[in-house]
Image 1: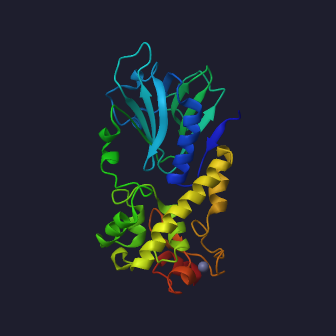
Image 2: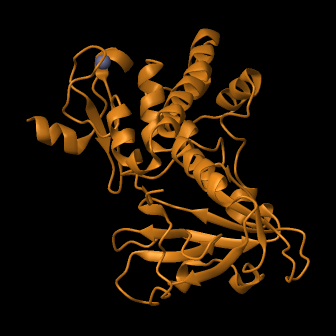
Image 3: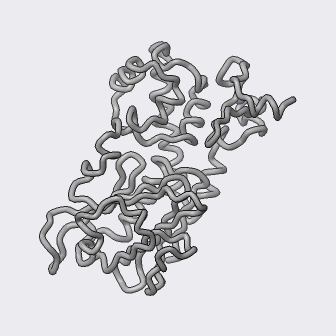
Length: 305
Ligand SMILES: [Zn+2]
């Protein structure tokens, strides 16, 4: 089996985290954790239980909550009998997971220049995965907990975007004064979708990112609800039917407007526009989504002068 590298060129969202979880589950479920190397202590947000509690325990499943990866373990033959200890990982913007059958046995050096934050040896000698983070901004985070709700950021998550009914979804939209883009990406309101897939969902549903969520009529709510499901299902299917190692290019080729500023909209041919803030930007098609209206953006108007 070749090594698995996952890099999405943006924050992994529900489809990527689902695919990573499914891959790790297929490799790790039922196997013992042999060792955990922590290269960067700043990544670990919890101290009790310590990461040294994990070796010897058996992985029961790997799944996700929102955009969080959850590696669940049960006691092994020689470990303390905590019924559950979970390793929770948030890949943040530049995180990668790389499975290997030939993992180095030398622990990554703390404070070194390596992008490796965490290494989990699991299964046969040499098997396991690295959690890496590119760039100098270190935002990747991991928690070791007896219950996932001990992770405060998980405890405050809104309902999973794929778990809400149409009526619950409508109630969320009607109960906010926020714009659609904000509602879809605020994890405390509804969890799983981030910047990239919210752009794709709003483009497919032909809705403006700046539209007020509470003003949507019943037909628009139906459309948005169905589009959330179809866009995420299509993306997840694309990722799971390809080698996960190709996820990065796969996500990019599947996108219609996100990260495509200045390129033609694949539906109508209009130029994809963007709205930029200091640390992020999002994209949309004026013809498909805003009735041709260009949304206010200082940087974009400078570019087009
Ligand atoms: Zn268009």
